[in-house]
Length: 387
Image (cartoon, rainbow, N blue to C red; front, side, top):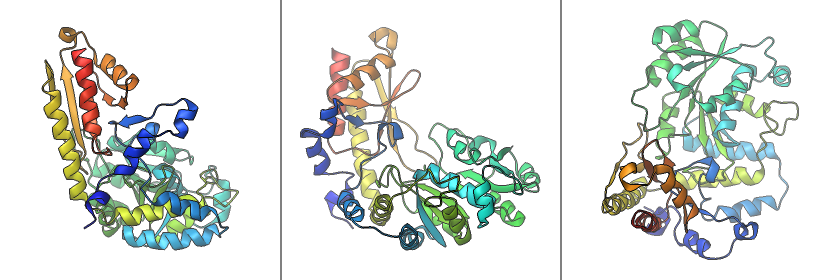
């Protein structure tokens, strides 16, 4: 059990930093209080305390990147419950490199040829409901996406020139469906066909236990974000899985100059940062973190419901993780305030607060917040609705 201060997302350091001057003030930028969630466009998260010093230390010495990837990969693979692992540029970088690995294996001639698929398999299978903007990381290798909706279609598809199956492991709270072909069934089909399966697990944290479960199921590749709830460097990720595929991913990446993944450079600082973040993250008391988020969400609901004509309620949890979200709605015509008006005022006010805007509602995601952020949000909403 970690000390109470360590269990909270950021603690006093983050609060103090908000009060004093910063590099952003020099640039004329006002920081945000985050009620959107782990969105890349606003920084995704804050690096875990203590990592800055370790990353700075790593930057002071020269080191063999291959040796560093190997040693850190060994430690990450033990945490993930897989044969091997490596550090990547976010989950998207992991997805791209994992796809490359399934196309080329350890054949360096094929590595140099990508995205020209001459002599390679040319397709990746994805369930139609798993299509998303991040599967561009699959497509930029040159493959053709084959969409399937049933097990029969999947069984037919894997008989073609298929290099890999992509499976979206996490699901958004607004999806009103279960995965048409569950992971266990997909693995039955792909293993029989000898086709590696990759799980995009960027949306599966917390808790950490979701990751070793995938390893135990025999998933060949797992793509993980290091810069979101794990609170490693924002540009970091982890690719974990089968040893030969991780080795092939490494050959397709930095520092190998003639490779599709060469632009996805991971520095020694990010390798050290995400490794230490993962070590700490795997030991967190996720129930304590959940209780704190629940407390803040309950406070927001109670305070928002005191505002005349405002209805605040919880949004259903994701299928794969517990994220506390508060949905706020009101009669826009009666109040003379649209959701766009309120969002704009929240973002322009003091402090600046960012939320998610729907068609007729706002949503406050209570996920990575400092204790006390909820009071600031309630205060700003009172000012807006009573003003």
